[in-house]
Length: 87
Image (tube, rainbow, N blue to C red; front, side, top):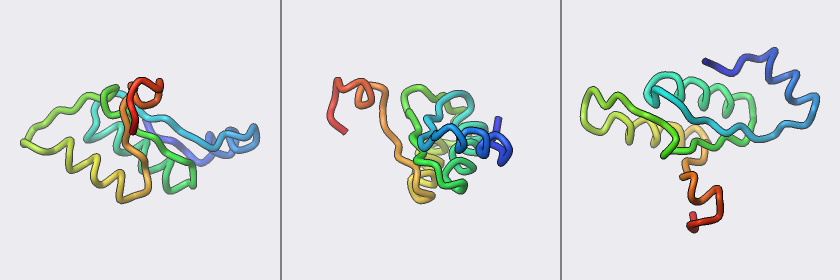
């Protein structure tokens, strides 16, 4: 699923500024949603341990997470978000 402009306009109207992204498959769905959210100006947080990767080639997930960081997304873990670890 991707974040579309109509949805983002509705969310912006109610004050949404952050988008938390997780799910399957990191290299496809998570990547698309996070890139779209970042392009639309949302603070984009990818919850790495709540994502699942196919890893068709070794390092696929790491490459996608690096791409998302380069696009402005923050990649973190659920433990950090819950305050159980420092980021």
